[in-house]
Image (cartoon, rainbow, N blue to C red; front, top):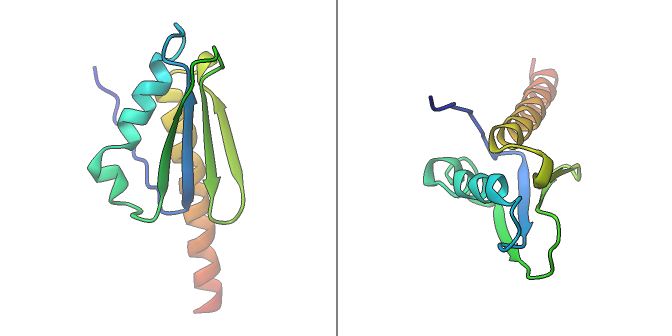
Length: 109
């Protein structure tokens, strides 16, 4: 059963996905990268830079999300599933979208 998670990258400035491909705990991080690299998700913010840092040092898989307002979300992929990472990113983005909408409504009543 496929889980559909809505992720809108509008409030995101950049995403760095870092992993060592030879470690056994990188599958969820690689799947996360595959999901956010899809055209329909990329279309939600063409200015969002997605960078991949592949290392061969046995380092822990990591996703570092930088938001336009300066906030940062760091997810350690060794202990998270792909769905958990996408859900965390999606909920943070939705929260930021709602705050931005509320600010614009206050300015233009």
